[in-house]
Amino acid sequence: MSTLDHPSVAKVAAALSEADQGAAAQGIRLLPDDARTAELAAAALGIEVGAIANSLVFRATLPDGTDRALLALTSGAHRANTTTLAELAGAEKVGRADPEFVKAATGQTIGGVAPVGHPQRILTFVDTALAAHDVVWAAAGHPKSVYPTTFDGLLAATGGTAADVAAEPGQHR
Image (cartoon, rainbow, N blue to C red; front, side, top):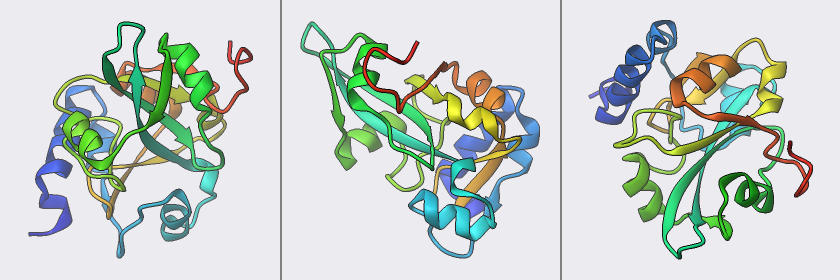
C-alpha cells in the first residue's frame, strides 16, 4: 500500500473534498521521507519553513475540570504560546498532549496530523502568520504526505478561528 492509499490520508482527502477544498485534496503529495517537523517538510518541498502549517494538538483543561483537544495550526517559523491558547479557548490551562490523546482526538499519529479528517471537529486556532504566504503546506494524515492550501482554506476547512497563536498573553486580539 502506498502512503496515498493509507486510511488516514484517504480520510483527509475526503474531508477536504467535503469542505469544497477539492484542489487541496487533489494536491496531496507523497514525500520521499517522513517529514515529522516543519523543517523537514520545508526542506523536502524546497520552501521556507514559515509556509508550513504545523498541526499541534494540545490538551486543554476547561474550568469544569474536563479535558478537550485543541488544535493550533501554527506557522513552522515559530511556536504556539500555550498561555495565549488557554485564553483563546477559555481553558484553565493548555499543555502538551501525549501520543495516545492525539491519536484518540484525531485518528492520526504525531508527525502526520492533518488539519482535517478527524473523528469529530476539534476546536482550532489558525495562526495569522500563515496569511503571509500565498500557499501553505499541511500534513495530510501521514508523516510522508502533505497538501497545499491557503490561510483562508485552513479557516474554511477546519471552521477554525484566526489568531496570533505565538502572541504573549493578552496581546492576541
